[in-house]
Image (cartoon, rainbow, N blue to C red; front, side):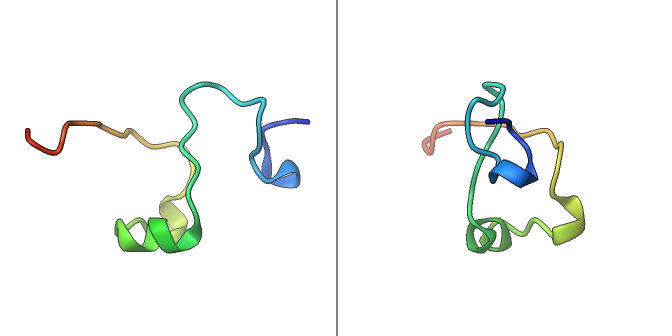
Length: 47
C-alpha cells in the first residue's frame, strides 16, 4: 500500500499526515482547492 489517492491515503504514510473526512475539512473552513500540503499548528485547548 501507498499513501496516495489510489489507496485512500492509508498507511504507511509519513508521520505528518492528517486524515479527516470531507465534513471535518469543511467544518474547519478548508476549501477543496486548499487540500494537499499545508502548515498545521497544534495547541492545547487552554492556550
